Image (cartoon, rainbow, N blue to C red):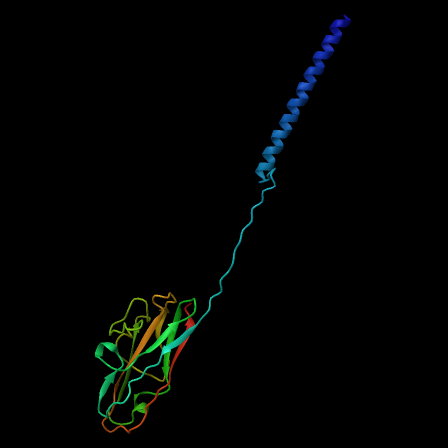
Length: 202
């Protein structure tokens, strides 16, 4: 009887040990599951992010002023290359990193620049240097108005481009001028100050 009791006691101890091991393993498995659920790593791995905000900057610069040179009274001439002129157009460069809206305004109109009979002082807008044309172009959007055609220069501000890109391949626009000088115009240098106001496109 004593031997049987000892044997039973040993069996119970083995069973209890097995249960303890199984219980411990179950706890370990459960712990691993919970830790993985909450993205915990036994290797101490951690992840992070990097971000940076590049600020927008408005910048525009006149690369070339417009000029015609000496011309006789009673003449009509233009700065546009396609007309074979020896003059130069005004070139605006988008030097920032945002698309722009551009307004043009002059301190002189046709009658104040050329006092006399029937003066004309016109402008048009084209894309890029040497690309002046009489029709509008894709990179310049003018709220539905085509400023590729000749338009009266004004002392009131006119929006000439509402989507002037900053990409280096298309970041210049050219403003050409067409003038008719009255036969009775006074001699001397005639100068208009042309202001191009650049603001960020909303």
